[in-house]
Amino acid sequence: MTTETHVATAANTSRGNKTELVGKVTSAKMEKTIVVEVQRLMQHPKYRRVIRISKKFYAHDEKREAKQGDTVRIVSSRPLSRLKRWRLKEVLTPTASARSKDRGGRIMIQMRTC
Image (cartoon, rainbow, N blue to C red; front, side, top):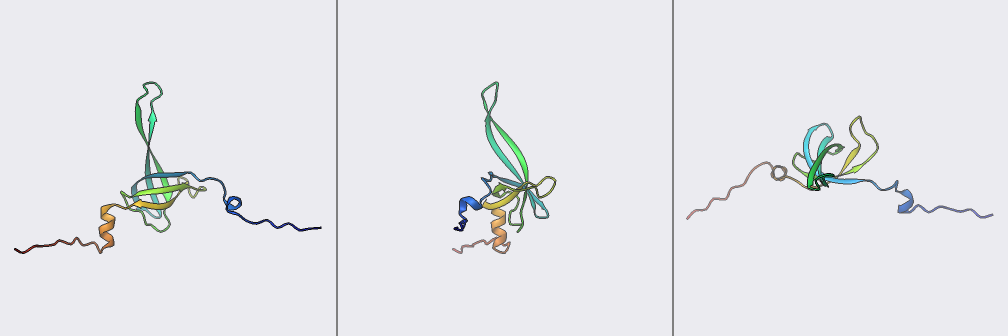
């Protein structure tokens, strides 16, 4: 009698495809929670004109790295609270104000003398 061992591969350990969305952070004032607004284009069913649809999602930000105005990628997850069903995956483009705070919050001005 032989014993079979199962080798864990990436396909076996993944729990299916997670939905990923890209949007802009509209609020980062809550504890470890951000509000992300995702816009998509949709054709109007009657008039056939392309319209912009936006929807807000609550996402979990464990390290509090996303700031208001950042473009972020979120992935679907199990329900974390009454409204949160998404987790922050990465910050794609930080805002200019967030980048200036990383440098110590000071704006450097160069002066020329003639």
